Length: 457
Image 1 (cartoon, rainbow, N blue to C red):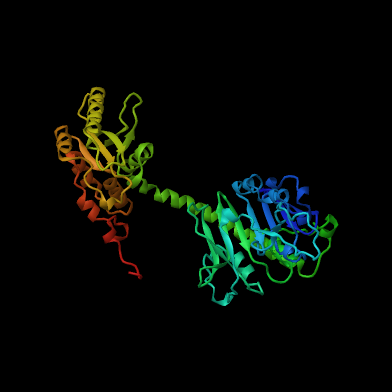
Image 2: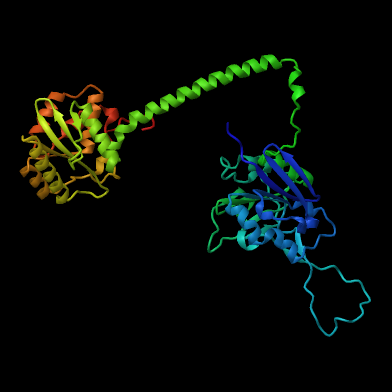
C-alpha cells in the first residue's frame, strides 16, 4: 500500500484558521498578523494572495519586521531548497508599501496648518531575486504566445479565466541568472502574463489575479494546483446505503480494475522480455564485468562450452568441439585502441593454460575499444605492430562488435557455425568479419547509412 506524503500548505490571506484535508493541512494567516506565523520555513508550499492587499483602502503599510517574516532568505530559502513552491497571486509590484522614511530638519517641529497627503514607499517582494517590474500597457490575451504550454497546462487554464488584462510583467535579464525562467503568455513587446522561476529544486510562480474576487484567486490555486479538499470523510454507516446505479457502476469498476491488473502484469512480463532481448547490445557499449558476462554468453550461443578455472587469471576458457580449447581475455575501453600490454597479459594466460592442459591452447582477445562511439565510426582496436605481435603469438583478435554480429546471425538462423569456428580457430591476428557484418539482415545493420528508410525518409 502506497501512503501519500503529508503536506503542509501556508496561505496568506485575510483571516486566520486551519483546515485539514486528505494527506494535507492548510494554515491560513492574515496579512495583518504575519508575526503570528511560527515558522514559515516549515511549510511545503506558500500561497501568497496579493490580490487581497489590493482590496484594502487605504493600502496597508508593512514594517520591515513584518516583511522579513516572508521575504527574508532565511524563511523562503528552506521552502525552495526543499523542492517547495511559492505561488504569488496578484500584482506583487504594486501591492506592498512601507511607511515613509522620517527625516529631520529645521522645520520638522513647525505647526502645519493644512492636511498633508499620506506618503508611502513601494516595496516589491523578491525584486532582486526575480528581476520583475510592471508594464502598465493593457494586453490582448488572444494574441499572446502560449510558450511552454505542454508543461504548464494548469497555468494556462488559470490564465484563460482572467477577465481583465491591464498590465503584464517585464523580467529583467540578470548577469547571474537564478535558474530556469519560463515566461508564460508572452506578448509581442517582450513582456509576459505570468512567470515561473526555478530556484534550486523549488519554484516561485507569479500569476495575475483572475479579476473577480481575491477569494476566487486563492480557491482556484488550492483546488486546481494543490488539489486541496476539505470535504468531510464519509462515516462508516454511509457505506451501508445504496444509491441507484451504484451496484452496476461498482461491478463495471471491478471488471475494469481486473483487466487493468492483467494488462499491468502483461506489460511487466513484456518489459522483462525486452530487457533480456536487448542484453546483446551490451556487446556494443559495455566494459568491465558486464562485457565479460555477455561475451561469455555470446560464445555459448555460438556453440562453445564455457569454463572458469578458479586458479587461472584469464577471464574464462571456451572449448569448441573438434577445435580444442581457447583462453579468452575480454577488455573494454573508451580509448580508440588497446596497448601491447593487453596482449602480453593474454600471452601469460596462454602459457599458464598450456601448463595446465599440457596441450596447445589458443588465445582469444575480445575487445571493445572506443565503446562510447557508434560502432560504424570506430577504427582498428590495435595498431599494425600489435596486430603483428598477435599473429606471431597465434592469437585471434576479435571486436565485441563483430561478436555481436555473429550472435545476431545465429539468433536469426543465418550463421554457418561450422564454417565460422573453422575460420576463427585457424585465424592468427585480426579476425576478418566483414562478410558476417554484410550478412546481417537490413533491419539489424549497424551502419547508419545501411538502415532501411522509413516513410519519412
